[in-house]
Length: 207
Ligand code: MN3
Image (tube, rainbow, N blue to C red; front, side, top):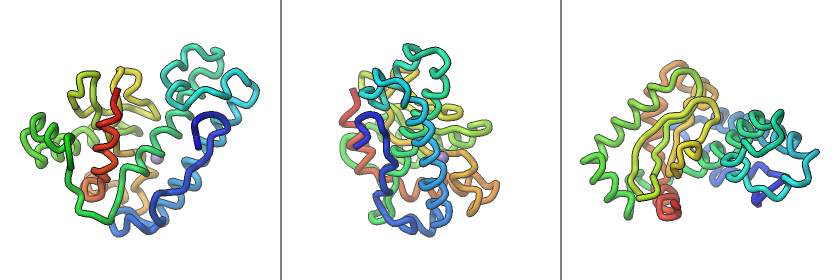
């Protein structure tokens, strides 16, 4: 699923209420069923007239957006980014196990940030620094070195040749119903439900 056009909105990997009390059920309904669905629908509408693009993956559409017909470059990049980022974000959370780094990524976080607490602080600072809408990311370069970056709008780390490991959506729709304007509280809640097994898999898969 979602190898190429027509893209679909995959179901959440947990119940809508599965992240309570950190992220509320209503936010998850709106975020998945309305926001992500809109990106999926817009992307499919944009690609529909271009059969030659129907076998392109999401990642290829984002990475090679400058090879698309000029007038769809920006909207495809934005909407493909919206689909890619949200699926990664939803898959990157869980509320079943204690949320602590595992495997090779846990070691790398200790080496890079000295401690998990320092990592959390750096991630919080980055997520707070996003002006307006965007994301904070843990990413890896081609040497598997990791760092934290932030991006505006629906941009992705692919523009910098970096591979995503995990991300936090700091668009207000991700937290406003529960956390109001207190982004810092939402970040703390997100840090409690990171799916570190998934992050480790993403790290292992980094090219
Ligand atoms: Mn969002």
